[in-house]
Length: 525
Image (cartoon, rainbow, N blue to C red; front, side):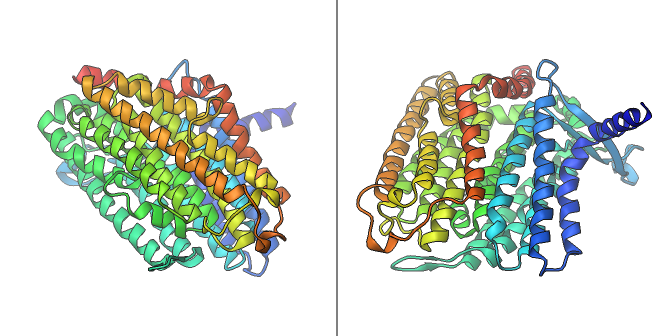
């Protein structure tokens, strides 16, 4: 009996600090790897897998335990950190590690846990500096989790930067160079371009955060506390001036046109697991930042600028789809497809209505899983053929049957086939857009539907050209998926169908986070 009570007490402690564990465990895993010899590859991989598995289980537990009937912020914990001196301080800690999740962040936590685990399994074939790779990989994901669970502007920005900066080394060291007929796009170039563009966006975000802190005048970086006074302290004029900084700063990471050009280059140059995290999770940080910081703290500014965002989102959809049609590199097709699909996310959140924002968040989740599957399969093909040129890849289904099926499932999800996660998410976005902004909403909603049709064109053409037809002699000796790769693809495919066939548990959780945001905007208006 005593043993049972002790176990229950430990479980209570873990449950009360579970969000701390969520971003602390990847950092702990990175620290443990520092003390393991680089030559002990088996131990390194086992530790990496164990950490990823535990974190994924925690992420699933958090999502399943989230009570959508209560809504609000759950699993909330506040750890004091730093008071500010002089007139800026309030006597209490101005910077606190304020943790919690709502329905939006609970869904993003689940996404990150799944992509982290599958990316770790895919990365078992990393042969060069494996230890260093996993250390940077875990540091990056620690930052991602931190962004999704923190309600303090200072720590939000800290975790945001922590999730972006390791990308430079991960791409520059373990990435690949793309060769075209007229030019070469080196991995170093792609890594530098990604870093410089995202840091430029971070400057805009930090300027806006500092302005919000001083304008709020409460001596605290707490999102919750600032939101309480935002209606009176953050004037409409202030919001209209500084909301665009957040919209562009975070929008850059979300692939917002015309600031998107770093994204396809980064996707293509990155190693497989980093491409999965980059497209599957990192781009969602930008959209999440617009919601968590921009819309929540500056609803008046959101109402002013969201018509522009929905137009730019529509451009994303069409431009990304048309650009994907013209690519011959398999990962570039997926990269521009990601730009197009993130346009749906931007359009959905810009509607500022429940249906559109529900669709935006569900699209973030669906797109994260779908692109993780896309890049995982593209990595499998490249590992075997050492090329991503769609003009050379022909008839691969005869030698890579399972890989072909997995890629086709990802493609059908991308074009919004009913029964798969992409259909539900895009349908909600379409309805939300048609219900917003009158005639403009009808025009842009029609453009979004056209974008879905263009997606069907390039996806079906890609599948037909790469996987069907006669198989060239040079591909006759290729092998199909290995058990570990099949496990990764199986996990992602199962989630795609679970969302597509039974979306309501996900939508109910998401809506519990969206409803207060939409209500606050209505009150501000």
